[in-house]
Image 1 (cartoon, rainbow, N blue to C red):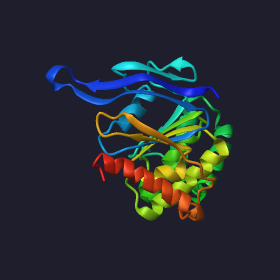
Image 2: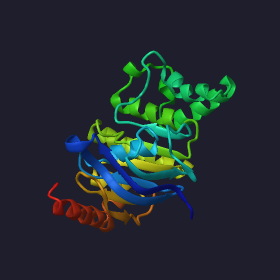
Image 3: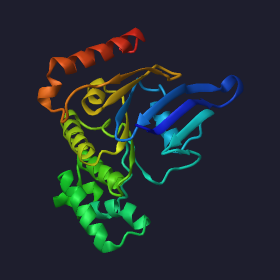
Image 4: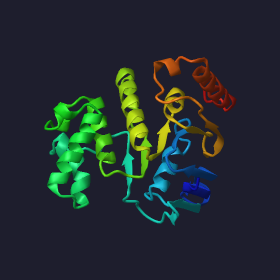
Length: 255
């Protein structure tokens, strides 16, 4: 299968001279269409920096990134991107926020309503379509933000710790929603996290990132069936993946 995303010698250095900070790389990696790849590593290792470079929001200091065969030289408009802090605008309802992506692409109102209704149903927000963000819990806001990022059917999704500020139970619910949507639509997902269990539960492969300057220590294929429900998470195979990944980080003195 041809890669959708290719990283060739990608490196990022902030500043110059004595004040320069080597944040990430160099890294070579290829990601195939339809994969769910987690970038797993400690805080400050360059995971988010790499994601921003793939999105074209940050320029590499060295190397080359291609997306669908085209070099990334600026912001990419045909991807979905989601951050830890959601980008919902407070003066629009949930429906209005999700529709915003379609409005900007010139989609007519009749078509927008059907698409928005469908995606809100998929994450159990259909009863909150006319509520404003301040009327929602943090978990509901993140689900609405995910719909906003997915509504235009992007081939590629970049998710930067979107569950990081949520409580454990809400986080588990949204993991399940995210997994279901990925299984249905099969976009290519790059998911930034520092949670070992989260990465193993969601991913087809996990890229283990070293402490700064971040490089890819190893890429672990996760050979477990989907959906990865509680039975899968409690299996010896899942526990083995967690244990082996923990050992890598123990070797770096991070845990």
